[in-house]
Image (cartoon, one colour):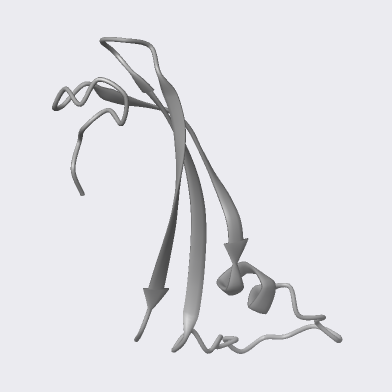
Length: 76
């Protein structure tokens, strides 16, 4: 991943303004309904888990703002 501003192309001048999770298949698997009281551990299958994030950046030099989407696949 390069650290260049897409407008002024200066290296290492970007700063993260905000990052947000767009899609998280792990947390949706954890929200499965629980019936009764469970006293034993619950295992969640994360072999093909996908986490999508959207990061908002701002150039420290020229002030240009942009976003980048990133997808991380967790293969256990």
